[in-house]
Image (cartoon, rainbow, N blue to C red; front, side, top):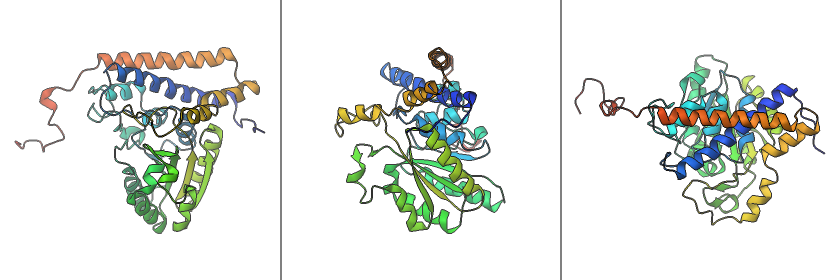
Length: 328
């Protein structure tokens, strides 16, 4: 039996709206990539929206966020404008990383969103460093680090977990387990596929949660973040989720059956959550269509902004590359 959504109508619809904003933005990005407007690598978050939306709504605006190369949704919900995100993917100077980072390197210090990292597991040591800095300064703040199941096989993961536990740092490790590290199935890479139990090796608290359920994600993250904020040390959360699209735009998806994807789509976070809200009288079809139209309008405006934004001047290409006043 599905539990009632424990939020009022306004907040519940905000969660749905954010998932719709991510979905429509990602769908448009795929279209723009095909048209050659977005280049380089592109990793879509379609299917995993409940993880970013639930988790980020459980954190405070003062917390630090470190993400992966599949971070468009996290940046958007964190408060980075869709205009700045889209302009970045267009390589325009109005982008959140001045057009130099692209899809995998979204960054915005104003919202404490510290990437966007193309290296698998690359954000984990950064998160530990941010948390260490806060602890040394006596700042009460959680650093939430998002990473995929593939990163669990990296040495940096174990080093980060060990130091965070050893020094009792305020890190919330958020593992988005979508069952595939690029094209490698989890059971072909990990002897222990229950990733949450790996935390026991570092005497770290841990939990697994249904990453397709935005309510489950939000409540689990709120509980875990509360423990971290209270000084109980780091916490490991495993979100069990699934990406509906390919790993990247160059992925032929030869490693999984279409039937498997379709089966997971039955648990898609948007339609299951909207159905719960409708059943509880917190959402009508008319209201759903209005939220969807608003998301589409925001996407269209962001694309227009990115199209009109300027490319970086050739005279500025060496800025932040060489020390000012030094001739290369």
